[in-house]
Image (cartoon, rainbow, N blue to C red; front, top):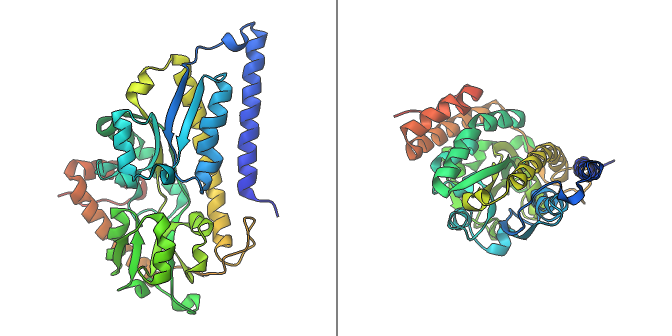
Amino acid sequence: MKNPVNNVVKSARVKRSLQCAASVLLGMTLGQASFAADFTKKEWQVVGTWATLENYKQHELPFWTETLPELSDGAITANMKDYTNVGMSGFETMRLLKLGTFDAVHALTSYTAQDAPALEGIDLAGVIQDFGQYREAMAAYKPVIERELKEKFNAKMLMLYTFPKQQFFCNFGSKDATAVHLADLEGRKLRTYSTSIGDFIEGLGASAITLPFAEVVPALQKGVADCGATGVMPAYNAKWYQVVTHNVRVNIGFAATFLAINFKTWDALSPDTQKLMEAEAAKVEDAIWESTQALNDLAALCNTTGPCEKGEPGGIVAVELNDDDQERVKVAVNVVLKRWAKRCGKECAMEWNETIGNVLGVQAPVE
């Protein structure tokens, strides 16, 4: 069985190679060769997401260290580190981007919402359950994200993409899947990484505890947490299946992620450099969306029964939602929307209703 994720990645790399070759041939035909464009020579200081995950390995890192250097004839190079290397939270890296310490940062909207609550609006926990609908909602909210990055961080958004579905991974012992429901989460301690997911957890009657990704496995082992919220493929890559028994398949988010460029850096670039980066960023964005859908499908198998092209299947039990569970999701979503609307303010909530709300047919309370 062929790995659909690898197929997507290989296809994207073949396309980039062909495009690069076509550009070179066109320049030679016109007698311009490497003088066809004026690229700004610069070593970029870049922060990516997590080096162990697919977005970084297959898309973010190649974009900065292969694609842009090749197409700019070596003018663009990058000193790139991931979140683990820099040892900072999302809002900390964005504050340093604003100061110009970093030239470019890949960051999750939920990780940077502390300084810009409106950014959290694209990933409100539990609100969007369908992956296809999520991209439609993101397109509707894109102007808001662009504005927030410009006003709060003096940054230009160059890319907007996602991680695989975010779900709960829990310890329920040897319970059969049909015996587990969202009601079983009541009173338990669930790991969160955002305020919105914390609201959703509390809306389900559970307790939210904030833990960095690297600390979740030992927390689950020691009973500090009963469940963890994370992406379905990151859970497999980090071997959560060794310390949990069930995957509760309620989609609590998709981890919206952007690439932001410091505007002072951006404005200093030649028009040719800006055009190149915008064009290539759009291709990478599309490739990530395509590969993420494949990862969603692959992770569903890898975490449970297999087959799994990435290794041995995790063997944990998949828990699908029944009608009662769906009603509990609605109750929790109401908590999420109400609390977020209060944090973000009246105008922010109205803007959400006119964009994402219209796509979903859902409205946040406006007070």
